[in-house]
Image 1 (cartoon, rainbow, N blue to C red):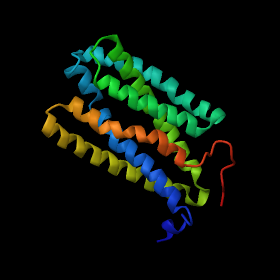
Image 2: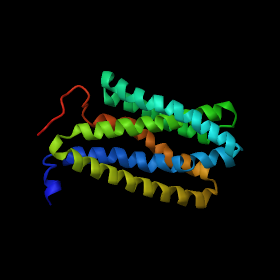
Image 3: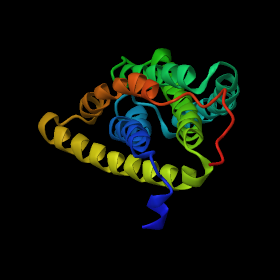
Image 4: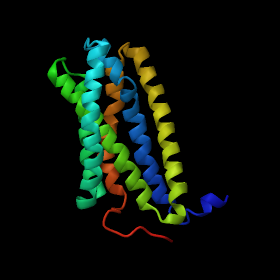
Length: 199
């Protein structure tokens, strides 16, 4: 199969990229799916208040989106991405288990902002790791595996909900293994300070 031939000797690297995006999808996306529902049903915010929080969070997220890319150009993709993963999963857990009030809003905003930062740097790290000849194929496969992780994560959250009858705790339990992403990032090579391969 010709597209797979382009991967050459990069299958092990592809496996590590797929592992990162699978764990991120499995552990993170179920909580993202319920992040607006939680504000309304668990913490009692009105639709208007949720809209205001979303607009404020969106502004911070745009800043985080741009800043993450620029900072990673200076210090490397992996250090910045590992910090963002730590921030993302920490504030995910905090948001889902906080007591309401301003700290809940702050944790939601930081959760959302780090979510956008992950989108930027995951794409950069995975795509830049591979030479041009394999980049599109490897990125596509990694994204598909991430989607599979997302689907399985939602299934796992649903099964836990059947036992706990609580989406907030179920999403938290599914998210906890996601802290492994902080270490998985370091299994991949650092592409920020090297010229992209055209092989």
